[in-house]
Structures are given as structure tokens and as C-alpha cells.
Image (cartoon, rainbow, N blue to C red; front, side):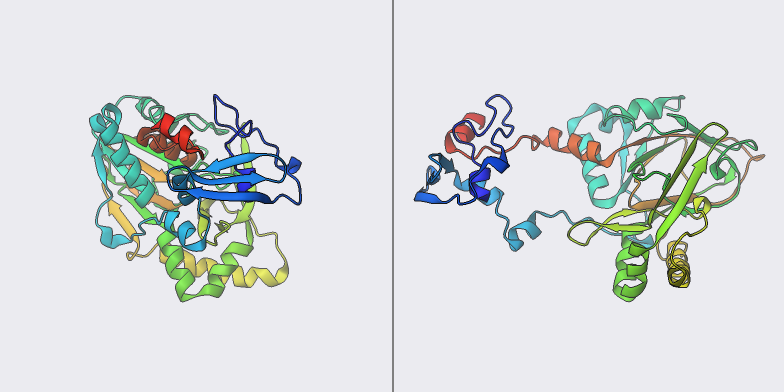
Length: 358
């Protein structure tokens, strides 16, 4: 069934796009080969009992081998880190926006590390949005498209205060929180205000190994979050940790300041708080936290479902401190990476089509 469903022969595909034209539900339940031949140059040739004949190139079969070993080998393994990393990977703005090689290096670092710094970004208002649009479409949220972060006694968010911000992920109050955040430091001259970043996936990997029951609790108990202003509101509830179909961490949301009262079964409350205390202590420890003072023109990029960010308290009377940030989606950045590498188009199954695309 898998082979018949993935034929590239005959009218199985739309010629100009390579998109599927065969409707899976129309394939006979008793589909089976009538004859099978293999030639190294052409690949596997099958005549099916529905009258269709299809050829599958060897390179295509290897690309799509779904044995456990092959699937494991294709899976990307991120590089997890803690405070011992010392510093995030950094790139010059002129390279990231001006060269394919520079942008690929930056995107590769994000894929592996979940965070990177771009240096010497022009310190003019709105530049963070212009930079973002070289990577992909900006993710619109209920609040400002370009968000100003500075001391504002009337601001709707704790980031507008001068106090310490514990490491957190942004906007867990969305069912699907923005998965990339760009933070551009227009000016950062105030005393204090050092940035903090934590690889949440590293914290969770260690917690899972040391205390699997606590980790499991964090995947099961939904936490409600809210962020609102005078005119807008966002609310959502989800477990702090969400896993993919292979059991790996897919989404991590952690925001102490935006959490609402739990609304769960009585017997889940105490185990959740025990897990939350354990997790919070790890996140806030010097073992995992990178701390640095960003310079004017630095732009911090974060995988928002993985890397937490915060800051130390600062003195707003000691000098100016003004950031602007926007959001994007991880899928769009990784798509940009594939396009730059020429890896985004599907590999045809037939040898003739492969030669035509070579």
C-alpha cells in the first residue's frame, strides 16, 4: 500500500508541481504486485494488480526508508547547553542580511542551539521588523506588531517595569505561542538589566533523567495563562511540556508572571506544585543560566518553544534602556534554511525524473 500510494508514474502526480494526484482512499484494499523487477540503473519496477506500473529509483527508496534505524538517522538532534556554554553564537548583521552563507550559518546555529545574537544591527526604530522580514513573515499577535520594551509605569506587561524578570517564554496565553522571538536592543545604557537565557530543553532533559515522575506531571497537568491590555486579551491552558509523536519535547511554556489559578482535579494540585518548584529552581539556577549585558545594536533571536529569557533588575534613572521585539514562526525559519540549501523540493521517485532535476 505504501509503495502504491507513493507512485510518481503515470498520472499519480501533477506534472508541473509534483503534488499528489492519486487519492489514497481510491486504492484497492487488496492492492498487490503482479510482477517485480529490479535494475540498479532504473530501480524497482512494479506492475500492480490495478493495471498501474510504477518505478521507484534506488536513491528515492533510500531517502524514504522508514526502518527505525533510518528514521533515527534522519532525526535532527539539537545541541543542548547550560551555563558552561559561556556565550551564545554571534553573527554580524551585514553577513546575515547580505550573504547566503552568513544567513545559513545563523539559521544553522538557531536550529542547533535555539538562540543566537546578531551584532551591529542599525539602532533605528522598526529595524527589528525589517530584519525579521528577511527571514519570513512576522507573526501577528493581539498586541503591538512591533513591541516597545522600556520602563513604563503605565505598561500592560511586567517587562515594562524595572524589576527582575525570571526566565520565561513569551505568550503561553496562546494555544500556539509564537515560536520565534527577536529582541533588538536599540539602547542599553542603564545600570543592571543584564539578559538571562536558559536552554529549557536541556533543563527538561536533565529533569526527565533525574526524576521521570516529576517530568511526567509537567506533561499532564494543564496550566492556564493570560496576558491582557485595556483592549486585548489572550488566554489558553496547556501543560508546560508537550511532546511529539516520538516522545521528544516539542513545546515548553513557562511564565510565572502570566499563570492563572489551576483548574484541575484535586489530586493533581500537590504533585503539580512539587514539580513546579523543582523545575523553577532548576531554571533559575546558575547551572543553567547564561547572563550577559547586551550592547546597543545587538539582536537576540530565541526559539520561543525552547529557550527562556529574562533580565536582572535595572535602574531606569541611570540611563536609557529600549528594546523592540517581534515574533515569527520556527517553521518559516526552517523553511528559509531549506530553500537556501536547495532542499525543499521533493525527490522524484522515477530515475528519468531524477535525471531531469539533476
